[in-house]
Image 1 (tube, protein in one colour):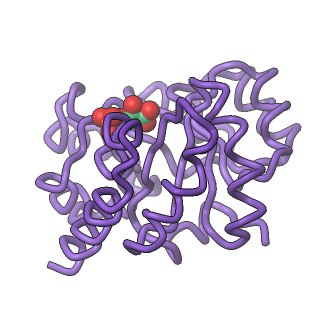
Image 2 (cartoon, helix red, strand yellow):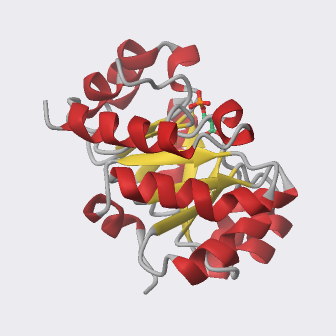
Length: 210
Ligand code: 3PG
């Protein structure tokens, strides 16, 4: 089943972002997250293993929400939108990238950090944006000010989000998803401590209920 950005919320309001060095870690890391209750997962395209993981994970976990992130070239977007992803995530946006997403007919969550970025996205009919890099930009304080003229938009803060800050963001009217690497950080994946990733996911799901 192909999900769209509007079905993302039926999964979990947290996207676990993973940068993978070894494709053999793809299934164990996703299994650990799903066991802990996090079923929205983004592999970054920063490593070949992250891209290779998508079709493998899709075959095993047909119903999870699966995104490919860190896409910044239109040619990559066109190529990788067909390998089983529900969503393409980009750190920023441009006419070329947004045109490519239209051509590929793939959902896109583009990164924004300014009002001009949001206006460009709106011109393409988009309403959901990745607020990136959230904490470095000024966090909630900045997002509150930035979002005021754009009440029709929703934001997914990413970059520096932690178990301590996730609910502060999610309590904002215009935020219903957060994303980050804290659930499955690279150092834990490297040493294959899958139970720690499940623990992080369980903890995040518990924090959501508070
Ligand atoms: C991303 O690629 O979306 C970000 O690098 C994630 O940021 P984080 O590592 O601070 O969660």
